[in-house]
Length: 414
Image (cartoon, rainbow, N blue to C red):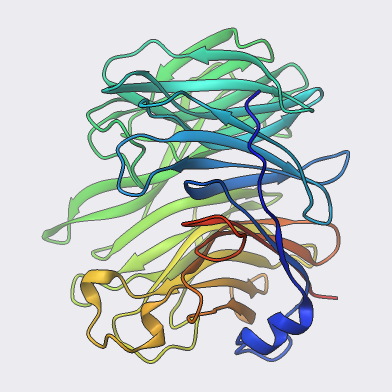
């Protein structure tokens, strides 16, 4: 295991209260905020609550504007104190840790690993509870690839999705020119079977034990309504990889899906949506029944209470809450090529956590926005106990290392 000794910077509640704008009445209280960073540019992708306590998060770190990176796996305790950090990869190669699930004796991590300076392949790692790499499994495929989603099948096996045969060495938001894959492996990294999907990439995967169905979400290009546009999809498989059903969601607008969650009576799917006219993304959530029929959908904009018409509101994670509603991990700000007023605080991105009821109606939005310090964006959210949530941030300033760090914001709604 490679360990980096990181600096910790904690911002207490009174500081947050003074500096963070919370635009909706009833928003949660902040219990703690911390940031961890390497000497490189750090980006967090997702994380899980650990059964024995604390949280495990994954991401990548590298030099700004570099074509190479390392993956990382980090464990923190329930108060955000770092316990260990494992860096995956080697210099001048490209590795990313993109997804994680807990097993009975550690963690399964999925992502991509460099096999040469110009090639990376889909990869799985087994990490011990203390951060040691137990095994590494590199998939055999053409060109580049990555594992993007994981879920547990049973105590001895797991399911994974992602893509292969891509021309891109780094992992894009959405892999358009590639082949989606689905596989099942045991806890030792022995793959039972691997199959191609009818889409270019699987984003996230979920196994429903009651129905014994594997469901994958993602984004696909469609030609309809006299235009080319992106739609969300759900595709389902049997435990042995036989395709059962598939559903597309969207219209003439652009709908991108980045996360979903299986519910007792269907699915919740989230991402962002843009019309061809405006080109600006709005947070998008939709709900289906168990048959995949659309029940409702909602969009949300101006989450940071900004005034510019150029603000993008993006979502990369959704989770159901204990009261039957949902929380969405979001970022709100203006892309550099869309800046029209150099002095506007809207140019600096804000991290947002949006809480809705069971029908998608907004309950509150918590906004972590410190434009005097830099950008923040919420990439993932982990529900923890009753109405408590850990926000995982890309942050320019939480933590003392430069240039960007993993920000952790723990909030309570009770």
